[in-house]
Length: 253
Image 1 (cartoon, rainbow, N blue to C red):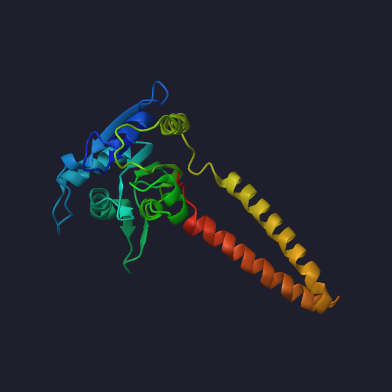
Image 2: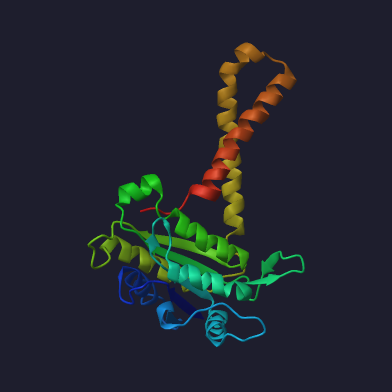
């Protein structure tokens, strides 16, 4: 098994590099690791009918690896330009293009990834405003298009003036190191998602029934009025939860 660290930072030994190193240094024995520092590569897009040896080399390293640990800082609420440029240039290798221009997952389908990012703002501000959300969403969008499966994410806020990563983040990195050291199936979170969906629906149904109790004063016992009100309330609650889980919820501390 092999794990590839991809560092998209301007500093080769900065805080994001420390996060990445803490993960890779604590994987189980027998697991091979390698780190790619993107600044060491001249990454440019493919040109028409020309091979791009740099992208070919990076793609080969990615293909040989089972898990990618993607580390890049957050600047102005967005992923660093170094990593974004890498994603943009790697697009023809991450996805296959259909005749109508649509894309389908490419050669990296069913591999796994862990996201790491950092930002200057305090943990409280990041928790409230989600400064790092867009960086994580960008990584997720790119990986999802390529059919690559998410393992988790680590966020380091409050980095202004910080020299070394704090103890709690080192422990979190070590925890994920053990998690990614186990070879994953294509998608070993399917059962977990079904269980989460079941409990989500169960809770939404309970809340909806609770809201309907005071409404019975106006609705009465009419079956269709109760059915319509239940459906509307349930839909609104479920839509809010799904929006939060799908578009908003990221690790922020």
